[in-house]
Each structure stands twice: as C-alpha cells, then as structure tokens.
Length: 118
Image 1 (tube, rainbow, N blue to C red):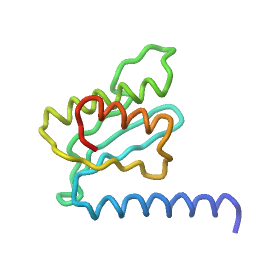
Image 2 (cartoon, one colour):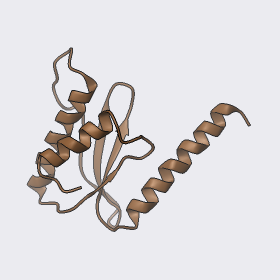
Image 3 (cartoon, rainbow, N blue to C red):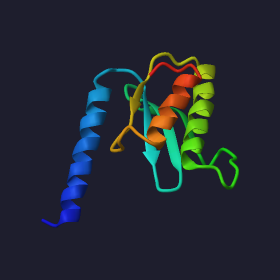
Image 4 (cartoon, one colour):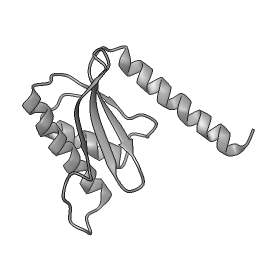
C-alpha cells in the first residue's frame, strides 16, 4: 500500500471517530470544512437530517491582505450572530479531520465570543 493511501485512510478514520462521538450526543453539530484558501461552516441537525445554518468566508467581505486566521475568527463571530438569532441552544463542535489549532481554533473562539455555547 502506498504512503498516500495510508495517510488517506488515517485521515478518514480520524474523521469518522470524531463525527461518531458527536452524533451520539444528540446535539446539533457545527461542522467545519477548511481548504487551503477558504473555510465553510454548517450547523447540522443529525436527527432531522437538515442543515440549519451555513456560512463561508466567500460570503463575507474581507480586505485583500487579511490573514486567514483573522478571517476564520470573523467567520465565527458572524456565524455566532446567526445562530443566536435562530435561538439554537447548546451545540457541539465538529472539527472533522482537522486538528484544533490555527484557523479551526480561531473559528471556535469567535463562536464562543459571540455567545454560542460549544
């Protein structure tokens, strides 16, 4: 088996392990997708199988020279405002296959800053 295939399987196992733990809680989850340039976030209710709120860095206007970590923090604050407007209570944070540092951590801090309980 090639190294790339082994790495891909390891990432898939990590992603499934994180998601399965969160789905058992019964709370809506905040799912994070991070690419090399942008981030997108969804609030998903697994019991009803529907997306409640979604937002991306593409939907927000940023300065040309702004850092990606600052963009992620601003995305968290904006998404937090949307979540509180909808009246959603406690949520769980699904980082997926990504480690909890950098942009993912900045997003979570922005959510907490806007009053969302994760």
